Length: 305
Image (cartoon, rainbow, N blue to C red; front, side, top):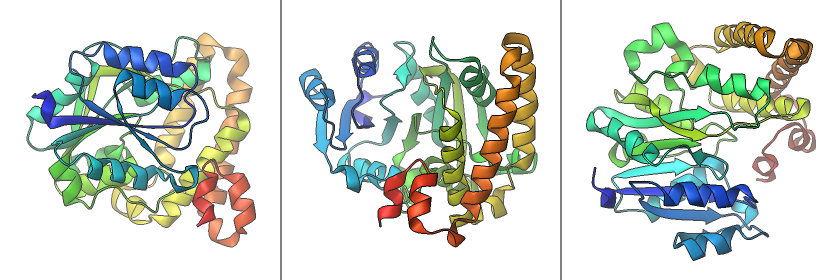
């Protein structure tokens, strides 16, 4: 693929020490597209290092950041790119061919978007490591609307931590929504699937990206997911509810921890209870005051509008 047809965007906010590793991994890519950094008011050296590296830098206020709206702004700022790659500031490209392999998915003209594999960081805990192994298998795949009966909502699973979009496909489904609290990637992926596009997963295109969330962070994340699902009801109506997938995850996690860290099984079960509680509260958010929703969720800025 011609590199001139590709652009990359990474939203940043105080990326910290890992930003050096991000830039080093980006510099080592055999396909290194024009890169736009959209910075939301960093107070550390993130913007300066991006500028020194030669990346295009665009500053926005922290209050104006929105998971979908900011990424849509990036697409509009990169009008010549036929394919737009998205990374997050904490997703470190795992090999020099990572971007090139990701883009190979577009050799199929029916593929509208693709995401790469996410490997746990070297220092990831057992719970965080399992989450990556569960959601990002070692074999590539291509999904279409025909997979909905078997895969349900997982048919539209896509993560903007490391993903790429065909511009024409993205435009055809209206671009990224600017009014979602979370899951702008899944909303676009679902619209593509329902419009007849295919979604690809490339296991040979990888980043190191994982989180060792605390108990409260798990609750907050799932509160936001619940809000997204209740405010975008068409997702579950068209693709199916996530309960079965959640049970499969718990069984897999318990088996994984039994082998690698059995002492963490009670903690993992407590996390599951907190996730479920957060998710159900999120789905009931219309009955909660705004001040409380700001505290219960991870993306506080969503509730300022």
